Amino acid sequence: MDATEFRKRGKEIVDYIADYMENIEKRQVYPDVEPGYLRPLLPDSAPEEPERFEDVFKDIERIIMPGITHWHHPCFFAYFATANSFPALLADMLSGGIGCMGFSWAASPACTELETVMMDWLGKMINLPPQFLVGNGGAGGGVIQGTASESTLVAMLAARTKAICRALSENKDLTQGDVIGRLVAYASDQAHSSVEKAAVIAGVKIKEVPTDDTFAVCGSVLRKVIEEDKASGLIPFFFCATLGSTPCCSFDKLLELGPICNKENIWMHIDAAYAGSSFICPEFRYLLNGVEFADSFNFNPHKWLLVNFDCSAMWVKNRSDLTSTFKIDPLYLKHEHEESGLITDYRHWQIPLGRRFRSLKMWFVFRMYGVKGLQEHIRKHVKLAHEFKELVLQDDRFEICAEVILGLVCFRLKGSNELNEALLQSTNNARKIHLVPCYLREKYVLRFAICARTVESAHVQFAWNHIKKLAGDLLKAQKQQ
Image (cartoon, rainbow, N blue to C red; front, side):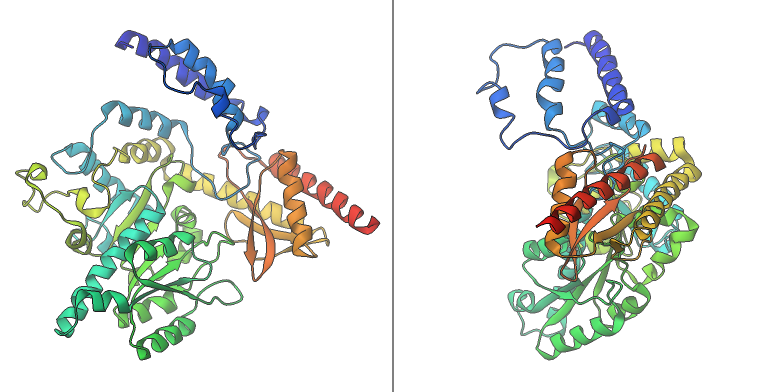
């Protein structure tokens, strides 16, 4: 494929994507295929001779689309939103075309410097304290990670290094192995599974901290767990506070937890993967009060801020905590400006070496939507979630299972877990809408998350009427048994 054909085929692909997005509602939101459906549709091995673009293009609909769950369908209400917008798609194309590896300033200066500025822009949009922003001359700064899971792991590994150094300086008789064996991390019993996975990778103990009746961790409970572990000879070193938990979008009490972590030399990381985007709206910024106590903070613009995956924003209060943990400097990666103090080499802020030009997506989206346009997007989703909540409350067969703050509604039929499992199964089997469940205090609960950029009130009303009908059928069948 030469440049001339690339221009032609590129236009065709852009048209295909635009048509896909414009007509996505005509597709079935959840695929009707069985595991292993794709292999019989493909040859056993790669072709020896080149194939025509037309043949590849034709197979998108024949082979790929039948197995796609359409996350941007307006009747997709599962998991959390994954962001999508035309400006971000265009920026991704440009990033792929430039194809740089922005692991250091010298590897592509614009890649590094735009990321630094965009992270400051975004930090100001959510009113982060100035010590997290580079432009204010602080010791902190922001970096784009691939996912919130990576951010949590990076924070935990940095916290582990810091805790080991502190323990060894306080007791010369200890070895590094002694310290690691005594380290213990904490997270809410509602925290994402990636926190536990980070502890597995870091080789440290982790304990769930019980939550209150709002599914939040409060200060008194964390303090009790810490005191018990210290009395047992353990070294508490890391706490992951969750803002907008995956099961029910609950919020840990930062203003209580932060001072405890600071007093005990415990690294406090804040995981706001979904909810963080809402903090650009002044009316939701209170949910981040207490971030000033944190050592690191993360959320995913690729969830709710119209910046396509992957783009996970992470800030640290002291960037040297990262560089002292991850800095490996072979000669082939050194460059003349490395020690100038004027630039950032992001390879020292992350686990991988290579990194894409992801800040282009932020730059395009922030400029083409503006803060006000992004705020409107968030507010629309929150309004639709509350509309769904009111519909549920009007039907006394159902109950709301957690406070509705942002774009997630947790609800269920009053009755057994088995009844609600059957409701979810029949809902997803019908493939008109898509939901996923969670457990809250051993109750099987259905999650209704407002996800698609194009979702409207009519889709929420359709979903509710569909759920009501299926629930009625189930309850009728139950009575007849």
